[in-house]
Each structure stands twice: as structure tokens, then as C-alpha cells.
Image (cartoon, rainbow, N blue to C red):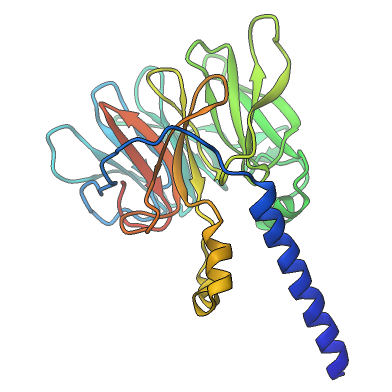
Length: 314
């Protein structure tokens, strides 16, 4: 029995060492231009519960969706986040502004909603082809999302919703692996989707000579891309999930593990140009202000950061 345990333990150690070696030597570091940037700071700290995403309307009002069901807003010249609209949900995630008025928010289990001052929450999409719209995946449901991570195959989908006809169609099917953030280019000639566990972002052409072709915008990112937002200059802001875990306290006990973990990327946000090159990077390497950044929105010379670990926006 003891010898079997030793063999199993030895095998596990070997697997871990191989994985760490691949992490260190395969995911080569980037060489961007480093800038002297002011450190991140928090916006008004009003106990925002897991504010994963953030958007801004034409009036300059910031909005975020929290896991306690609130859409909160921060208006110009107002000092505090205010509770705006509420629904019975603990799975509000992505949020963006509507073309005319209001905002659009995604609920992981209930679908897509439009939120306005007059009508509150109204359903845009809740079902597709008779199935409940909960996660854009053709093989695994929301409860088994980790199986999609382990398999790392292209089971993801991109849907296209027409607000005029109120119709939804499958635009890309079985093309994206664990599809997460999605954004249109400035000229709307292609869209970009983040493949979180493949450490890359794919691009699907909507216009021009390459129309209908899907290729890679950027790969070998120094972290897993979560959301993506278009910057005013046409580039993209992409937050990278920090590779940290409360179960890794043991690394502090040994110099070797400290050196190994130190080789992992600690970037928070990268700015990616239209040619797929990283042109800027912002980080908080010591995690003194913010961690687990999931979205980055540029507005009036500031970068607003959504996250899942803190009770504020950065």
C-alpha cells in the first residue's frame, strides 16, 4: 500500500513539474514598450459585489452589474454609486450600452436583457431554438463549464441579435473555444472573440476580401483573456485573468516554488493594436490595489477596471 502511494505521489510530482516547465518555457514573454503609468486606484468604494463589467453612456454615466442583482450607476459630478435597477439574480455579468437608450446586460442563466429608466428590465433573448439560453456552448451546460475548460475544444458560439426584428441567429458555431468577451472593430469590418483557456483572441471578418474567414488576432497572451473592449483609437483593451489561488500558499515555503511562480505572468490589462501587437500593458504586480481584473473600459483618459475579487471598480 505504501509503495503504491509513493508511486502515485511521484507521478503527480512529475506531472506538476512537466506542467510548470511547459508554462515557463513555452509561453514566451512579450517585449512591449513599458510606460511610466500612474498606479491603479479605486473609484468611489460603495461595496460593489463582483462588478465584472463596466460601460459608459453618451452622458458620461458609468454603469456596472453586480452579483446581488443591481445595475448601479455613477453619474457625472456625483460622488457615489447609486442603485438604479434591480432584478432577482445573482448571475449578472456582461454589460454594454444600447444604441438608442438604456443598457444591455447578460444574465448567465436567464439570457439577455435591456434596461431603461422607464421600463426597467425587459427580455431580449431567453431561448434559442427552443432551448434555454444560459451559456453559449454546444456540448456542456453551465454547471459543467470546467469540462469545457479541460477539453479546450471549439464548442463555443457567437449569436447575432437583430433589435429591429427581435430575431436571434447562430452566427459562429463550434469555432470558438470557451468564448468569453466579444467586440467589433472600429470600422465594424471584423469581430474579435476571446478564447480564454487558449490564451488567444480570434478574429472573424465581416467585410472586405476576407469576409467569412476566421483567423487569429493575437495568441500566446501572457494570461487568459477575459473580456474585451474597443478603445477610442481602434485598438482593444483586454484584461488577463491573474493566475492566483488561495490553494497555493505552499509556494511561499520554498525558494524553488517562489521562482517558478514568479515566472508566471502577472499582467492585469494589455492594449492590443489592430495588427495583433501588444502596444501597452498595465499591471499591479504586488496586487496592492486590485486583482482578478475582468474588464477594461477607456473613457476620458481613464481606464475603468471591473473585477471579481474586490468591492469596487478600479
